[in-house]
Length: 101
Image (cartoon, rainbow, N blue to C red; front, top):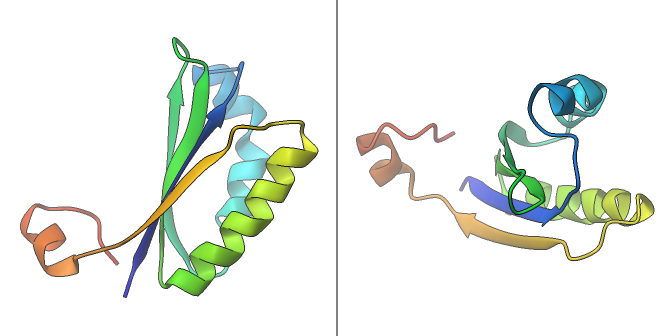
């Protein structure tokens, strides 16, 4: 069953186009993660938050990514990481045109 992973954390920027330019190599790396179907990048400059919504093929892949990514963020000095996992109800998601696995 597909697993959705939601992560956000305090982030002082850059945001917008500057974020896209600065993190393009990181995005390419994330795209290669085992079990990753897609990632939606999230940012909120007003609240100084960034993160993403990820769809993984299974919970083991999501767990492995979360452990690796949390360690990477911590190595950058980022604390206050919030993460939640959800199983995807694919039948209902398809009915509402969601991008399920």
